[in-house]
Length: 224
Image 1 (cartoon, helix red, strand yellow):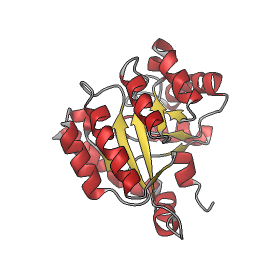
Image 2 (image 1 turned 90 degrees about the vertical axis):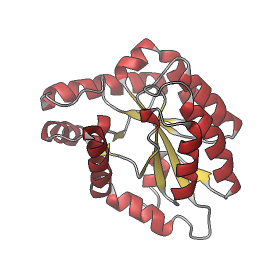
Image 3 (image 1 turned 120 degrees about the vertical axis):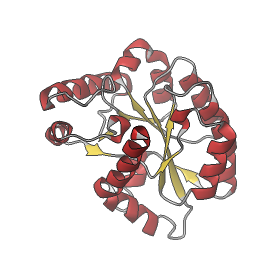
Image 4 (image 1 turned 60 degrees about the horizontal axis):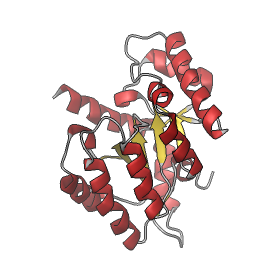
């Protein structure tokens, strides 16, 4: 119950903190063009799951955004390098997925450590940050403000992190997805390959509906 409440709180914060970008995209994205959606993946990279997800994305020639943990990138640099080589966007999700109880200075150090890994591999400094579990604290807000990061949450939580079956993930996404949505998936914390198998249904179906898959950067800078 407590975890579900945190997720609900995160969704509310999402609209409060990135309201301008999301609403702008939903109002203007289909001005004679295609509806757009951003796939995002948290907590990786993972040595197996990330690679398999990258293979599926390559199969359909779609791009996604990976919010990585610095500690996992240190252990498993190869899938991160593969994601960069394939043209996916890499953004910051903290170093170790722990933010509560840390000072602004400690948080800033971890965020910068992750940013250094991203820039070393991709040649591009991250611009966006997704708080672990969607939890913002005054210390985290202070750290992010000092770094000039933009905080990004999501508009549709697939709940793959709960071990939800792939068929249920796909059904719920395809029933509720809208133009301009940011979809939350995970490429590390989920058991098995339920995320991958859900994507095997979601991606081709949305393509058949005329959706275009874009990165968070592309989605939130529309018409800026």
